[in-house]
Image 1 (tube, rainbow over the protein chains, first blue to last red):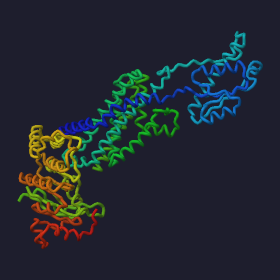
Image 2 (image 1 turned 30 degrees about the vertical axis):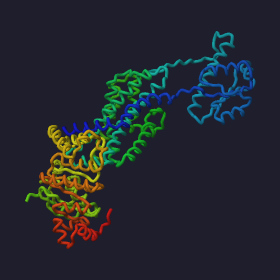
Image 3 (image 1 turned 180 degrees about the horizontal axis):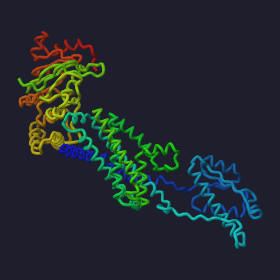
Image 4 (image 1 turned 90 degrees about the vertical axis):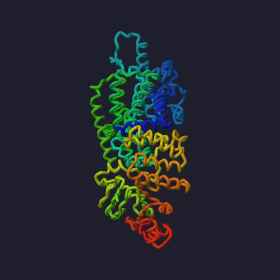
Length: 372
Length: 246
């Protein structure tokens, strides 16, 4: 036990002496939490619109005005022909084309029916999809407006209509920051837990001090504990910092309790520390460890539900996410912060994470022994 | 005579390769034992077995009275080790390194404090005690590393090419420290490529292709091989090596 005290003391001295680690610990959460949520914006604004109006009627102008007044669209050009506006799309100046046919107004009045054509630039699929959806809903809205104002006798509605009013639970304003920030917090904790720890251990291998430790009577499990405990604490410190920044910058205060978050984070950190230890047993220098970490981080983030929802992934990808510890923590973070889930609600996640922790650490320690 | 290292037909094979091939020798207490051999002759492998870092394939050996198969933890408690790679923590200060190594060998705070003061005094590092080890010149680092290796007063200290890259003056001082340690009863087991250093040893063994080909005092070796320098003794033996150097 006494040797553990000296190992911990040494480790903390080295960590606090290393300016780059300190910077990573304190500046990384700040930058990631302040810059990333602002950049990763799912809402579409400023969609460039080209209008090809063959009708030049009161109704067509009214429609265009209603669209531009929505705030989502910016009128890029009024083109005489579809071909001309298509060129705008080709030059990437326009995202979506609305073509209003000739006799739009006449058809609408005389036949109660008119057709519009919408063409979207689908190079950016999200923008195209959202743009045409927005446009359609504005047109539908306009449709209803025309009907009430034009059929003078609204005594009864000839077309039955079901109006849908929706309300968004847990994130009423659909603020994407509430979605992003908990996820980014998880990435931060993972970086500290898995990657700083593996780099640290591999560094001792690289400079040869681990050989010196091996000829001392220090027990291997004490050496490992001496490495894991400091990074476990650092991980929790970074998460606390992150939660503080989330509150100060975005006014995000968990609906659930901090205790739930910390209990899960404590177990989660054990799991990712095991991963870090495992990486360190398979690598012999810091470059190798760094490259492996980089590769894993990519997979963790892209298959972790940070940016894209896991539910919309293909079945095989969803299957892979089950082996990704990051995906569980992201889910738990969102559940606790947005929905106020409590420990019983996340018990399944907690159990799986405990499994991860036991498995990864067990594997790492076995491999560490073997490779001595 | 009291032996602190006893090896009998000690071997280590990696697959078909016999890295160490049935070496037998004894080292007595307080002796300075030179362990010579060309690169790749098997010195480091033999030393790793004696330090409890690697389990032998066959043969018998005891270090400080403990068995190299079963009592490696006890061996580790009773030996010091200084590798050819500098292995103090460069981002810790001189004092902190001593405190750390003293601590993990289970020494009391009182012991650590007194010993640290004594070493700083001995090496005249009063002004450097609070400096990071990384900022010291190589020669000082090596002397410090040796002091740390014997900080816990081990029965035996293993030195693996301790003076590589060090200037002649510092090497002299380094050997002065080795003699002081031996006078205190610490057995010194040292590998080197410098033949003048071999002359400083009480006895010298020369390994060729995993076997010990010669073992005697430097004087005795020179007489046996009919030359006047250790250099030519070494060359005569090492030229016969089948293994190419690494």
